[in-house]
Amino acid sequence: MSKTDNNGAPSHHLKRASTPGKATVLAIGKAFPGQLIPQECLVEGYFRDTKCKDVSIKEKLERLCKQNSICFKLPYLQIQLLVYALSPLFFLVASQRITSMDVHYLLEVDSTFNERKTTTVKTRYTVMSREILDKYPELATEGSSTIKQRLEIANPAVVEMALEASLACIKEWGRPATDITHIIYVSSSEIRLPGGDLYLASQLGLKNDVNRVMLYFLGCYGGVTGLRVAKDIAENNPGSRVLLTTSETTILGFRPPNKARPYDLVGAALFGDGAAAVIIGTDPVMIKESPFMELNYAVQQFLPGTQNVIDGRLSEEGINFKLGRDLPQKIEDNIEEFCRKLMSKASLTEFNDLFWAVHPGGPAILNRLENTLKLNNRKLECSRRALMDYGNVSSNTIFYVMEYMREKLKREGGEEWGLALAFGPGITFEGILLRSL
Image (tube, rainbow, N blue to C red; front, side):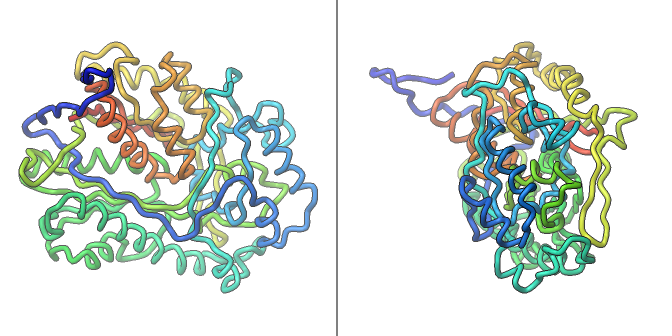
């Protein structure tokens, strides 16, 4: 419960004790590439840098921006979103009025959109730059075989961001990096052997017997999967400290606009690049460590017979995908039962008695979740804020949400229990029952 002073202002939240043997989040960090992209003024720049002269596509983008209740302005160099389209949620963003014209059946929104529920993506970060396009002009050429070039850019970029996020996390943690016993590395943006986990461990100066786990190409639910795996490792290895790092760039899916791929344009309005890191461990050393969230119970669930609903394929041009028209309804039909399965472990029954850390695949998925579960107005504000500040950064985004949630709970007190949720190919649901400390 939150406390107030004599003037009615919230006082410092009294910390709860962690449950012995349960995994806790001990520190968090994030990092981004150097190029910050304001959302509102970059349609012209995008067409200039991709040398696209098709007026009809430009008009379509402008129409999408105007008719979309989220007021999207497509930033240049952001059409590289096919890698993140492995998330089933990217297409739930545009107005129903343009579905048949611009995005066919891949777009759907909640008809109850209103000003309160809209979420404008205001800023995002991107690895892609004019310098990269000057060096690799073939990336902006339709049909070019460029997977080699893409990986030359993406592989070092994701490790660089992962390193920066990890260093920030370790600094907050306050213990030596050599105390890390396990590392989990999550990415849908690099392909190589050995993987980024080895490069990251080496650059951090970790011991050479650190236990490494790679989680590749999970899409937007990868961050919550990483938390579940870190929880299992920490709870089964007393005294261990697990560094979980996620890092993503949209380079693998970058391509110029094309009339045959209108859904790319919608995805381009959402996604960005970045990295995140957390340190997980049980039984925190209270003099040295400051746990802020407990990972109480975790569930992964796939929906049988839906493995082809999200179909992503790697080709010479990058990542391509197909999405089934029944995807949004399947998510909506199953989300309440999934949440109740998590809540039952703490005998919780009321959705509004929880705090919510939901991966913001797009504004409409947040609206659908809010409406289906009848959540109060501010329950998803941390998810909306993360989407506004960073866009959808695939597996990283849940950690940006959790960081905002930490700030909110510290400032206001509030609920003891909450849920972290994400969705992706499979169709796969990932969820964790959280406890604020």
